[in-house]
Amino acid sequence: MAEKIDVLNSFGEKTWDILDRDTIHKLGKWHRGIRVFILNDKNQVLLQQRSANKESYPNIWDLSAAGHVESGSTSIDTAIREVSEELGLTITRDELNYLGTHTDSDNISENFIGNAFYDIFFVQKNVDITTLTLQPDEVSNVKWLPFSELVDLVNSDHPEYIIDLIEIAMLSKKLNYASTRPTCE
Image 1 (tube, rainbow, N blue to C red):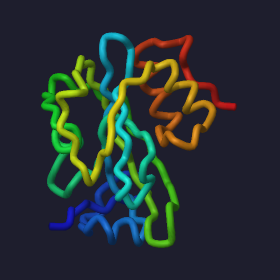
Image 2: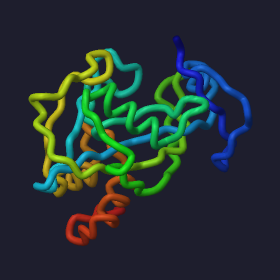
Image 3: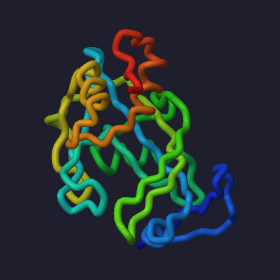
Image 4: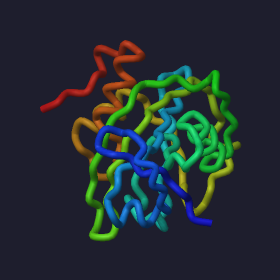
């Protein structure tokens, strides 16, 4: 069954139209998504490598989990669901820390235009990655990466990583990582 997603206007407000995921992207309609950082007590970020079968950014390293907010759902419920589906990891509402929302407009191809309001969350949790159950059509691999290294990779616009500079800045600010805040050069 195709995901049904609420269409938003350019201010992030529901238009009360609902479209399937493919149509939303084909038409470039605004919609809501979530992105989740998982950090351990060593200040490492859990990253996922997107499946080779993904329409957008195959084989590229991304945040711990991400997804579309389906019609009738909330960003919090979606974050919990996506972490469970993609990683086989259970998290609770109390573990989610909201960092903020940012917009992103990305013309990936003629039939895939990503116009989204992303609600960004982080979870502080120690996870043994060997116990995770990855969703093969979404995720091919996971790894821990020190946050400072991730900042350097994002600042250098490394082609194997699609994490947004704004997301890194949000997490840096929340965790008071003044020495590892990204630069905007």
